[in-house]
Length: 290
Image (cartoon, rainbow, N blue to C red; front, side, top):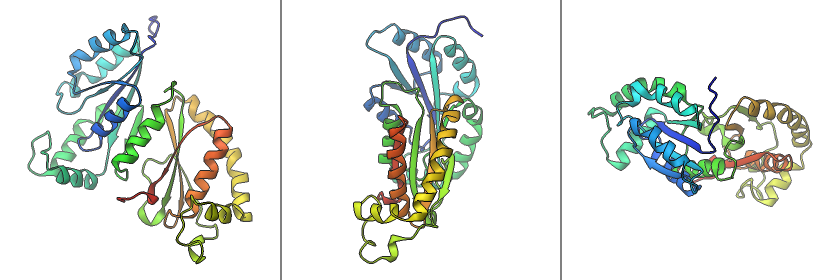
């Protein structure tokens, strides 16, 4: 173990698969008060971090790096190990499904940086090349089901507060008919609860509305579920935090993600905030563009 005292500077290295949202995430870091730089050559990162640590006005930086930097594939591990001797370093790796990345490249009409004419071949080649970089990451985010707005919100919720090292519990409501959020660490299915969809006066209102929340939370089955869930979370959340996790994602799902799961997520968020747990909320299937 190094005898060097770690510097106060907090550094995020943001990398991942092309088209997975690195530019959006880096902009979110900038909005969260980080000093940001993109596509910095690997050989200059250590110099940049050391200079930033000597600048009184800079306490946190975010560095974007991707497959365009060829040294990423051969020198990344050594560069990170050297930085960690003196600085607090967190590596975030963004990825997404082939289909999501292909759709994004077609929408932007930008060529893939590897230069392959076939996008699917390029994506799979890049995924293979970056496998060693991915293993270095402490945080891996699958952005397949996230809109740019949701990704930006995820980053700002995670890092906006003064202490970015405190773990965030990310609560995601979703509909099983649209698929399980791939980033979920814990999943809870609340389809056993009475469904407001079948009550005409509630059907057109989301689970975040007072009338639907009142209906869902007044059910005996809901009360029993939460009474059993909270002790589990009280036990497991501190254990995840002790493992050095930056965030823990809890998915709460119902059929369509519109009524029961948003109501439950908001209630869990309220309970966790009382316990001084740092939280963020995403109602995935209430958002547009999904």
